[in-house]
Length: 271
Image (tube, helix red, strand yellow):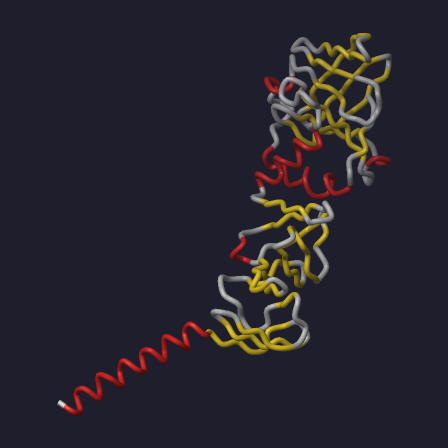
């Protein structure tokens, strides 16, 4: 059987967490009479078919050899015997699409080498790694966003709960990460503390806002220092951040209310 070198992230993060959803090797209905293809990066096409009578067919690029297999419940392992060699493989994961095994022995106890096999009826393209990753994301309720540079960020947790942000299992460093030209994530201590979007206020000035309205402290593009007066806001900017903000519409509403109240009071006083 050819070894498939699984990325450390998938070994240390995905398989252990998915193990609670794994079937046992004793659930032979998932195991037998299925075309299990070894997933690796070689040109060789290797397939195993386990039979209920203990036979196993091993196909290498279409050439078949017969062997034997046996399930050891006390060890949650499989013995596979072919070409006069018996090997013990420990169960790591099993469902209707993926069988993950690890060869037994101390010399393999600390490495990250797995034997991954995909049921080609369930995964026609045999991209086992992608299947496991998608299942992991679904089961763990993880959302994935892609940065402008193509890097994928996994967001662990609800948006309202400041989700953890990870890349390849590691928390992101503090900073600002652009998802699109008009959306950025603000990361602190590995958590998303804000999600801001860019709103254009003039032909040469935009503001990165987390809500529907600008606030003091928001980042400004196009104006490093100075003042901007638009139809709705009067904004003062220092070092690319809003330090002063007046809502002109609300101010106008206040003036109108004041005028109306004054007129009413005048009418009452002189009647």
